[in-house]
Length: 528
Image (cartoon, rainbow, N blue to C red; front, side, top):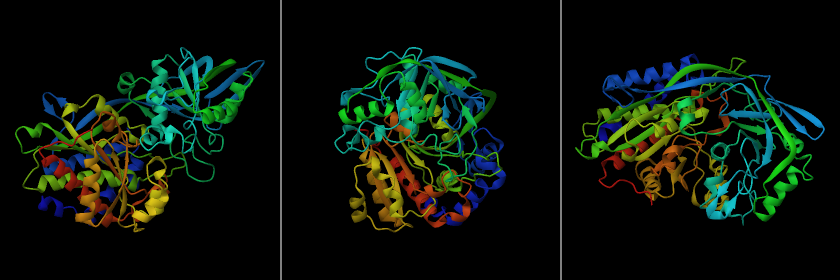
């Protein structure tokens, strides 16, 4: 594998990224001209290098693209909520009092009674179910952001084996939206104290960030496969209005849940919600770009190791700011294509096939990777591992990793005593705890071959919010490499002049070596 490894050079990392993150690609938003140019650029390189297509079949011939029919949805300023509580009616404005809109794809009015469902969680192993004893049919569900007990150390929701299940913003919301849909609900309002203190519908605090586009893209076929209700983030003022006729307050009921660690779900008497949706729709299309290098073993070549990265970013905003996305995730995309080139150049191929995936729609809710898992171009049971590269080109001070460990079984003191503050060497390796071999490979190969320091952050099934997550949810051993470059996350400042090309190339080499090792080992990684 030496020939391939030596072909991965820092200057090449920089040169490829210079194109992918150029202003002219307009931020590579999903289903836009810039994204298509980036995809076609990589496809042309793959054709030059002899990478085989691994996407859809057309006339019995594989294509590089896995096409996804999409609908571009724009939520207009005439979107608002009217709460009728007793004799009074209050109006709440889109972008000020509520935001989000995940899963919204139709204009109209959702007119229904409201029901409060705690934190919107079902955890039978913890004897906890916010949906028990309440009827969600044809109602709008109101929940609180977070988890029972907040950060209480004695809360079972904060036990090491459970933290990742209830962590983050997007993943719990999507799970709740699916549960609500299955129970006949019409919409979900998640109450978050940060809403109402923001400058845009994306949920950023006032004065802290430049907002990106409010454009949303959905995949109807994916929505059919995984039904979920529309999701909105609501201000506490909306919750107060909904509780005004109940004899209780939202805050008091939430505090009861946190104190008792038991559900206190309830109907909200005389609270009716009218959700007016000003939505425009336009049919469009995007695609995952999929290539492969076939394995050398007659039998094992039918099994696959996926190396993936999302190619999309967040585009251009109304003020003309280009969100270049050099780190997020031009770096991961370039990493995947460099590994593809390295494997094409290497005279000896591993036993298993390695599949290279450039996902679309990650910023829109993991659309591309979720679509692949629902409609795989090869049997999902034949995929033995997923290696995900997302933001891999920044120096990583130990303080940046400390900001991420709240949902893992490691304290700041343990982190400080176990790892040196060497930003040019440190990175995070998020792994599936049922597959400890993924952590072992990450730590040992990084240390022994590349003078890198992997900080393993292991959880069950794995921390979400990137494209490894849908694979881990199907019990496919997964790892996610990240250098925690969050300072410029989703900002115009995420530009190529801030990258460390030498560190990036080392991480790409690490991924190449790890993928080759997994693909060439007779025994596939276990999910215990």
